[in-house]
Amino acid sequence: MTEDLQACFRTMFTESFRKLVLSKCRDKAGDLKKVEATPYRGGFQFTRYQGTQVFHRNVSSTEEAVEVCCEYLRDHLMQANAWDGSYEYSLMISKDGKVSFTRRANKAPAPAARMEHDRKKKYILEEGRIIPPLVDMGVFTADGRVVKSKYDKFRQINRFLELIDDIVKDDSVKGAEGPLRIVDFGCGKSYLTFVLYYYFTFVRQLEVHITGLDLKAQVIEECNICAHKYGYDRLHFEVGDINGYSPAGPVDMVISLHACDTATDYALYNAICWGAKYIFAVPCCQHELNAQMASDNFPLFTRYGIVQERLAALATDAVRANLLEHCGYKTQLLEFVDLAHTPKNLLLRAVKSRRKAGSDSPALREVLAVMEEFHLEPALVRLLTEKDGA
Image (cartoon, rainbow, N blue to C red; front, side, top):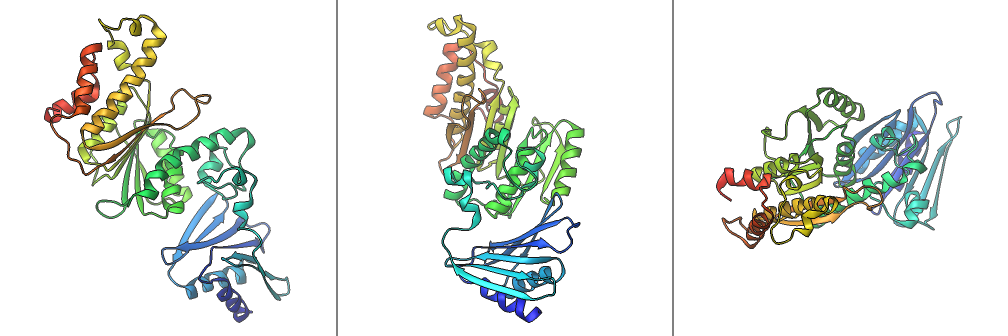
């Protein structure tokens, strides 16, 4: 039977190979659900879904891939389906060990492209794949389907990843020294940190090291347990404060999601000091400027509490964006979820440019003019001034 299986799998791994799925476990009581193979860096990556865990194995040649497939079908599984640019392949092993192999012309893309939600929109995190963090979040069912009541959350997560993917796919994203090193400030329970690790590692197939930072020791302990459970061996969490955190090595990307008030400023300041190439921040609770804001020339903006609060929040993020521009970053403020879902809907996205930061710039002059008009002292201005007299 082994020779028959080898011949079948060699037929499946063509030059236009796209995907292979091994399924139908012999032991119905076992926790092995399926194994998938996809092209990966000139070879193949095998993803094994076992219980609530996902395991990955990379092989560099077709012969190695054939041997891995044969091993699974000899010992654990009974069915294989594969797709390439022209054909769909199906292999079945009967209870008495008889091998049945068929090939037919593709009439449609591989199954993932025919799902209901994908017909409407192609998402980065596809429904139908078992993504353990999304299962634990209650966004996905155990078999990888979106829970109907969580579909808005599913869309929000994908929108956040899209805003990162816009940079990743259009830029030569790589670490300054080896793997892409990412620090996530104020990670909390870290569901999005886990999703980011999955995205970079298994969707974009980039080598990353991610460190999540939070003040709560219990939360950090639980996150490290989850990282071990998922097999995310290059994701770890530390107890620490954004203010004063010192990384062990270079940092290429800084992420800060919903850090309260001036905690976002400290995250941005650290990113600037480290020379991080990429910054993604979703600010929250912009209280600092609201408490300071006053104007002699435009009192109507500070007369009404709700107007002043919203103006202060927008001014806070506009000042941050301009200061990043002043420090040599190409910066954007983007809406990443619908206003109907949350008022905290701005993403600050910055990519370090080749333009050198200077002691004076139009972006800085604009900030200073706003500070003078509304009597403001933003935290990030203070931090940069203390650093080098910005």
